Length: 405
Image (tube, rainbow, N blue to C red; front, side, top):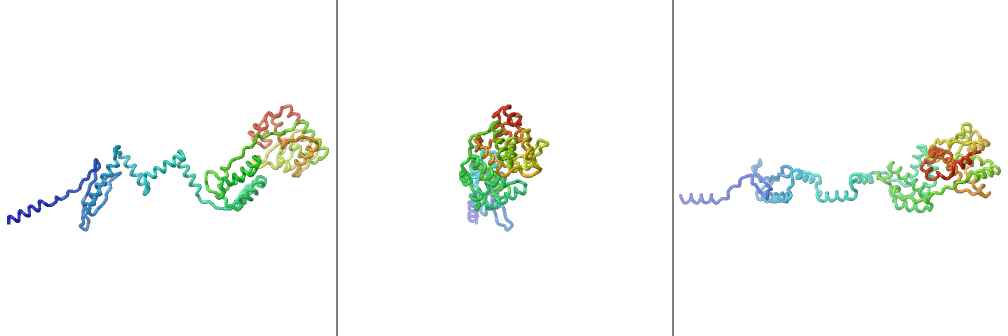
């Protein structure tokens, strides 16, 4: 009996001591705890708990698995603290950054952001928005169709595009008409523009095409990007603009030739030399807009882009000639009047530089008045152009000779 009791006592002493929960697992200063709980069905479960931006728990069905995980987690937490221990705020920031990255690697996201900042400076968000605009939905149409819609829209706005775009759009359609508007590249446009030898002509075509592309972008036929392919083309370098003018004696000689041989061209010559109208404006001028009693004239067919109600004063010398031909209404001259006048005068031995009639008017007018802004309004030019090309070409005395009858 006694012997049996001793055997039972020894067996009890040899049994593994019962674990006391929670079990604490440490790695350096990092602590992870294991808790034991019973489920409703009587089964025991083990929960591993730790803190990282808040309390975290992970559940296991057996204690060895819970202990293995707890040891690894404690080591991980110790590694994260490293030699420079993270503050609580840093831990919270790290935790939130991981949450925002989702399944993406936090390191990869940071590297990508730094690369984007390197490429765009401090404009990363703006650059991202601009890139997003390039992939926005737009309607894909052919160049021919877009040109057609462009002309219709401008006409509806009261803009006479035929006069402004009659040389550019047909050439552009011939080259790109069958292509989709959004497929044309800057290099294609540049090659097309480079085919025009004259720098001024090339820049004029470029200006029109840039307007067409901007309109297309605005109306949903191109991506809403910051710039269009046309805007990225390069302008041609134009040589310094040489202004050719004639003196008062040459003007008198021209008037005498036309009065003697072709009187019906006199009004056109007067409008060019003494009123400063452009060739196209002269050919479109109507007598009803010439008010000799008020010594004032409204330009009937003002150049697109200039004031549509441009008023030009009529000097005494101009009035003298116009009064001899004035009628109530109707065109002042035909479409080739200025060309014919130049040919007639040149055949008599007079030297007439290109566009010398209008250039001379502006030069003498600004010398006479000394007022650049007033002259720019009368001529339909900008003050900048007047300053750049027309100042100090002639004296005030020469100007009086030009405008005197």
